[in-house]
Image 1 (tube, each protein chain N blue to C red):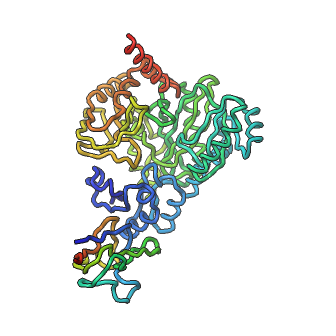
Image 2 (cartoon, chains in turn blue, yellow):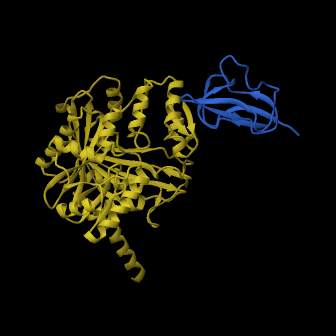
Image 3 (cartoon, rainbow over the protein chains, first blue to last red):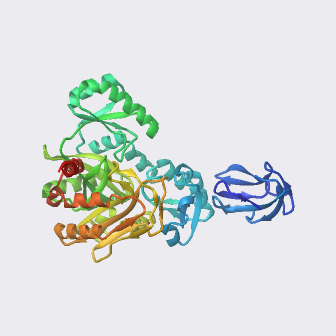
Length: 80
Length: 429
């Protein structure tokens, strides 16, 4: 299992913009470069990438909530 | 709520706090100096105010400004006041305007001006960075021929360390005491002082031992320092806690404004001990808009308090920092003893920040008693796992110059020289 952790503190968003569908859901297939969320700090957006190949096994950070540096955002069940 | 870096997540303050927010990785630039992350965390958690402590962003005008813009109370002075005293040249001008003497000196823009200034001021002199402070970035020049190179080097170092290449020159005072005055201002023009501290025991401009009151100071000089500090801060309508630092020139029996620190200082416990006033509580009170809790007449000083800074450094290796894990930490306890520390058995001293582990303070009715208590407290302290300056503190406190009190800022160098002399004797004995 690969844990996707917050590379910086900020507000975590699961969609590219309000009202749009989330980047991923549980079961989505991802690879290392897939964007799984955005962390916004003082109006600057930072893309969060999966960092592993596989499927999303769990999402532990809620949309539009504050996440700390290092906090687990998603779990990815690695492929192969 | 405590904002912590990743390496401070399990620290004692983190465990004591009601809750913590991890603002970034260990490196200070990405955490404790990360204005965006801190302001974002404060807004997201609906914090009313931020206390910046000392160091890091405590005197960064930009941080205070961003707090103000975000509607978060910055517990400290206004951004404008931080900027006014942070620029050491502006601070000198403010001192002169307040009728407070400054060390003979001036700003110089190039080598020619430096040479002219040196002829005016005299030698030896100190080259200081306008954007510096806290004892950093100073160079002593003893002869005119060394001046051009020293000016070029000082300017380059200042640009790199402080982002401001500007320098100024000041007469080097050969025998001086560092005496500073603690202030509280309500931001509306009311300023009171809480007495002075002597911080002459310094190594490379970093304080090692501090005491309140300053020993062996003539009454008129003591009062003049208090009045000058209050005058300086009143003119700025200073808000919060701050300290005005002076050099007391022992040879000329004069005093000069050095700088103002617009923050709570490391050594504030000695003032708290002798006045019975909680300075951090006063900071919060003033920030909340309640004004000063006391009038000048209410401030009394009782007895004497002395503080030692215990650093994780190796006194046998030129005080090289000694990070690592503190396997055992036993701190002294007892009436009149206060220990401010985040270090307990098992704590780590990370390599990312400064080496201060603890402050040990002794307060008693007179200086001799406070000194004896502090020496006993130092000898009862045990730190295993990292090197510390405990033995050097013990050496300083036992030194006849310290026992007599009122020594100048050359004291620590003399203790080091005496120690080297003793070691040489022992080796060749």
